[in-house]
Image (tube, rainbow, N blue to C red; front, side, top):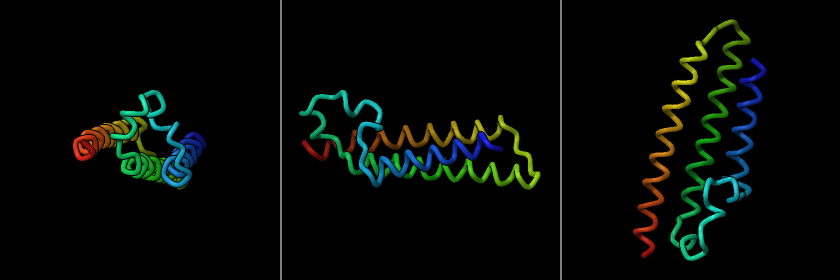
Length: 106
């Protein structure tokens, strides 16, 4: 249960840091691209997407912790599969938005 609580709080913290505090360094690869390419990235959209990812993932893990606290056991394999599918969807969507944003900024 405590693992789920810690993971939930970490994901909520990351979502808050990227979305509200605008810590772009937490966005994978953003700090290492050249300045001319950074101008083509819609960073606000990326922050919004990754903030949402952090919030939803955090709530998901906190929900798993609450369920476990009340004796409702969810298979860790099922939780992992749901989390990986959600992560894959967000990665696909964020990449699609990044490409769309770079096309619109040309």
